[in-house]
Length: 354
Image 1: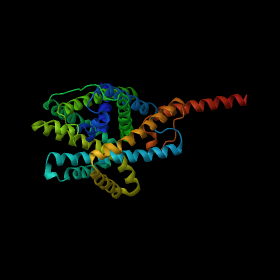
Image 2 (image 1 turned 60 degrees about the vertical axis):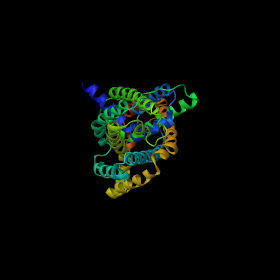
Image 3 (image 1 turned 90 degrees about the vertical axis):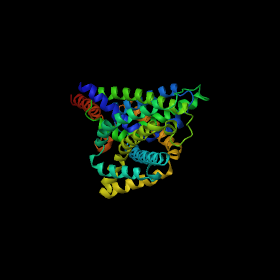
Image 4 (image 1 turned 180 degrees about the vertical axis):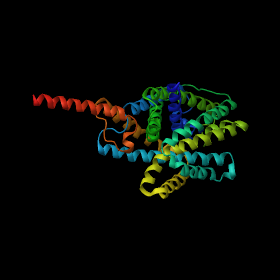
């Protein structure tokens, strides 16, 4: 029972990190997959997502090298800040498109206030929000999908290579931006549950993305600021708004907590407040612009990170320094590696003595 419960927790934790404003609105999915022949590429993306998170769970942390570790720490902060701003941008688009509060961006401001007050929970708080809010968000988003127009898959994509590239960038981007919060929330769940949770999450992500893209294509809404909102009407639109709000809040905090931790360590509560205000101001760049110009950059960073992490795993050169976020998940794996090295050194010393 504990194994299955931990597996579900892991899957929801990953979902809370990935299924934010860009995903649930369809804006991010349309950009990376288009609306023609997307099913094979969603399966590829699911496979890359599983492989990427499995690598993080197996090896944990940073590739070897102090300079490399510092670079990725800074890159994580950049990626999490960009995603936090994009979640608020998605909420701003929702207030405009749905005419909430006359289009005034007060909901995103309220989200900033909530996450500022909740930031004391740290990265572990992301797991609690995901477990509570993500099931409701997924139920509501599917109410919106199935209450909309006819679902449509479409024909073959114009360029399969572009589809493969988009799927990989999408997957690596979501792995990379999720590492700090996911690694903290995953502690204590057990390796088997983490791998099973990653597999369940990957299947869920591919299936949910397929349904959203089918709804968007069926309503010819790919060019809208929030494609899925344009594809649904009436009560379904209300369900979509509620789902986007819950998903945005969960993903915003999951990304923001890493930025808040660093800002809080440097400047205390004033630093956390300044980070929230900066994310709010940057959200006015617009969800479409953030997805188009910044998400691909984070995807490339994610591909480099996963590649270097796999290299470190294969060469048994995982960083052993116990310091903050560098330890991420697999302290046990690193400790075993250290013990093996110590045993080898001890045997070598004994042979020299004899």
